[in-house]
Length: 127
Image (cartoon, rainbow, N blue to C red):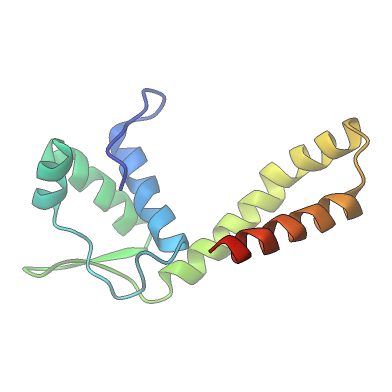
């Protein structure tokens, strides 16, 4: 996790979002333990209550489960649920803005898709 925090959003929310990003990127998987509140607080010099609040949001969302005396663990199906939710949010909120920009700039969607595929393939060759 990146220790840089921005001023636009509460730190607990940014921490929550970073855990979600790690799930979506496959860094964390269903069944994995989250780092302890104490370790995260010490590593990033945060108040443990800030970390706990971030983790509690994940619990409230059904993504994480508290196991008394053992820590917090990613629930089975958490990544699948997140992907479903993020896809829906993208389609409802971000995609219309992208389509609007494509139309305003008179871009050809076929060219954009072809270019994106070429860039993705070039990235794989560089790996």
